[in-house]
Length: 194
Image (tube, rainbow, N blue to C red; front, side):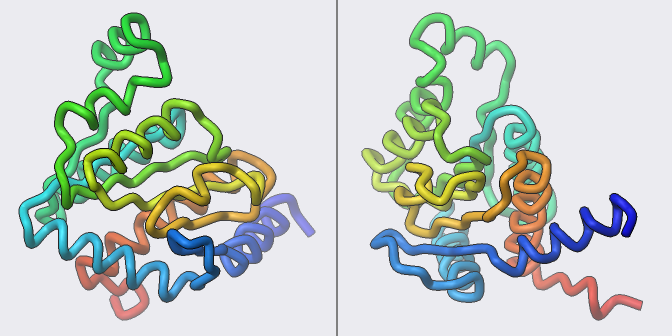
């Protein structure tokens, strides 16, 4: 089997094993997880609330990508805190763990939704962002991977976990999950297109 075939097969197998837990830690499965995420999105959108996306590295690019897609394609008010000046100033002045928590503290409001993307689920600035969102009575969705016991996996209202062991595989599948959620919200069905 070629490397590509092994990679494709592995990604498919990992996607089939995605775990989703609710805020109590109960396993609810992907179908119920997406249903709950879509409900949170609909509630935030109808109330004129904001979706905030945070992530580091490749997850930061996903955060920016999804914030743009939400605003441009789905009419969802959305932001990602990935501005270079903001990240460097906050990291320098307040500490890197505050790069997302501080803006959430300034801008977040009850009814907003935070989508926290972290392959490891252990990044201090992601964990602080979730903590800041909770102080603002925001809903939280997490996307994590690598280790089952990562702390972020227990902090969201809905927690998607990809059971992969490499960042590339986890990041690829996080992007799939994000697009699945947004496409479902928009009613897009690739499998019905000519």
